[in-house]
Image (cartoon, rainbow, N blue to C red; front, side, top):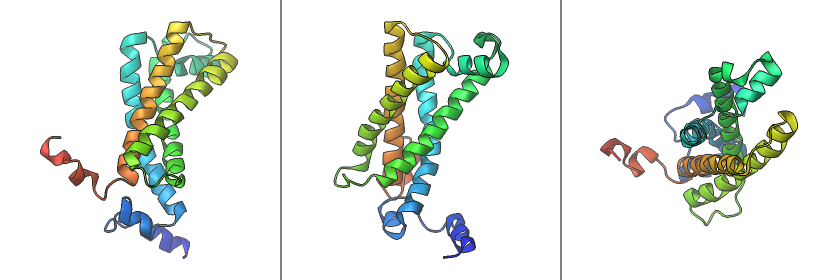
Length: 189
């Protein structure tokens, strides 16, 4: 199949790009591509949910403000709330795309409902991001040592992110043909 044919196929809106029947027609790479696009959406939503969870509890900007401050401006992190939040969303959205693609390629437990797999693997992914964030980003790159209660909330925030991400990706990449109809979004649900 030529590149132009492939692009035309991706642009086509008449065929479903996700759900069980679409998976049967797509190669693994195509399915992973569409799942990664859903992962972008899921990463955005999960980052909003994570931020809404952490801001009222921690009453501070995400550590990405510290990263921006230390490696870009050299100023105080409190001077860059918008840049810190934007960077936080960039991290969350790109991690969502990675998760979406990986989720589509992982097919060992196809007998388990996709929503359930999404929640389990999303939780694991969120905690892996949390471990990376606390050990590499905070300790090594930013030289930040969190107190025990702050660290617990840091991990809890990433667990919330992972749960949200996994539920979104699982329910929209393989679970149903049409999430709008299946979950009755148009009827106020």
